[in-house]
Length: 79
Image: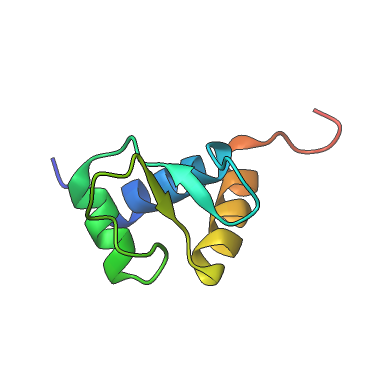
């Protein structure tokens, strides 16, 4: 099976939006370490290494997280 890691990263980033727990872009990091590492390399989250149970999204990551969440997980109007 040929896995599209970019699609996995997009879904994980969208789910970070769902788990935001403050106004500063902190989200629970309950995803695989390889995903958080790739999201960090792409500039969407700050360094995920550490004992913290959350990650901090960058400004770009927060905006993309919200857009992906809405695109992937919300229903179109009238449905």
